[in-house]
Amino acid sequence: MKKRRVIIGIIFIIWSAVFITDFSLARANKSPFFAIPITRYKDGGSTEYYGLGYKVIKYVNLNVERGPEVVKIDFGTWFLRFSPPQ
Figure 1 (cartoon, rainbow, N blue to C red):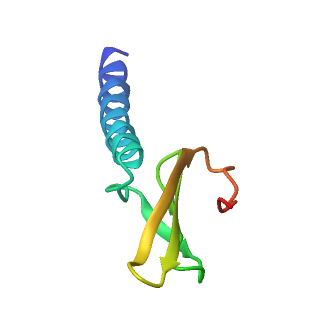
Figure 2: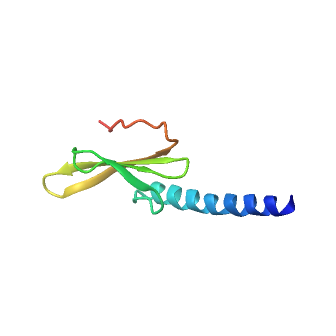
């Protein structure tokens, strides 16, 4: 019984580290490190990333002078919907 608690605790600590790392990167407008890119949209390069229990959406607009630029990054559950900013 004690061994099971230790294993569950280690898994929780690893998941927390992965979650916090990707959350911190999303707050800094950078791509997540541990989440996997699943969908790429043809609006300039917007991408949906899936992690273990969370989803990151990176909205990119194509600018004529500067090229692609990150507009915003959303972080949420797997049920987060793609809705580009206006």
